[in-house]
Image (cartoon, rainbow, N blue to C red):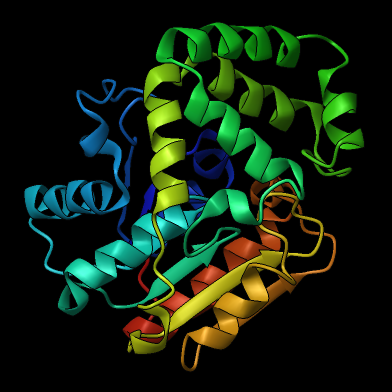
Length: 264
């Protein structure tokens, strides 16, 4: 049984594969995809997003699940465990930190970006976001993203197009800014040594947002008995570049939790 938050590329490659063996429930974070923008800043704090996920499980009549978080979703998955450990069969943490995301993202530019977001009023951030959107939609944006390490070299044009469309069309700038600030203020390092369920950590050595040496490996070492899938060429777009390896690893992990294969 699996749960993860909704990311377009994740759905495109991994959710259909996993759905053949498990019950898969997806959801859009506030201000993402088909979800409405957040009404308050408190509504996008990481524990609040975890409560949203638990409410979805309640609505589906499910008592337990395996939270699968990508990027900032790792922080949400950890807070789901903190809030309701008895409802978590296992954890899958894909290419993301346990907290304070800008401390390790984008090298020296991460803290600067956080400071810029914190200082900009919402109208200013919306204006800046529109400018970024116009850039990512340009024909040469894929190559630029690869040169900056934001997109891996194996990313296909079709996958990049899907990723860009998600960025351009399906994100509310105001909610995104508040969520970024909330992700930086959140930290679950205190929780990691107390995690008592099987955990799979996936980390990429070339991930500029969550580099394996600074994020994935410390996360793996801090969680007792956790498993690690380290991708030597993994970037933050490994969900479509290395979906075969990630998909198979998550399947093996979840099959080990259930003790049997479920075919839907």
